[in-house]
Image (cartoon, rainbow, N blue to C red):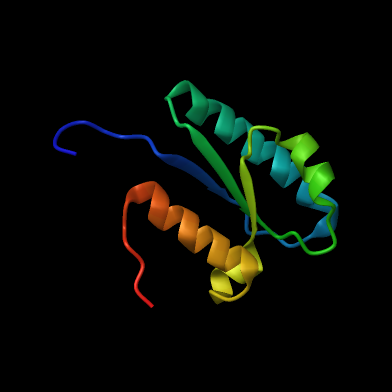
Length: 99
């Protein structure tokens, strides 16, 4: 708005699909979210491959993340994670969604 920057949401996108490295990616997301928190961001989202992973374990590795979204669904623009991401993003930035 004008010259003022409004920090609404920090979104960390982790594109790898290797399950054995997923927990490292969650830890990297946490580091980024911690930096964003220092800049005053109120929301922290992580888009990551959730295939075969326990959400509870990811949450322990990135407790700052408010919402988790499956990267496959977001990229395909299909599924419950995509719909949730789409709705939340539109709400965060004030864009009305059309159908």
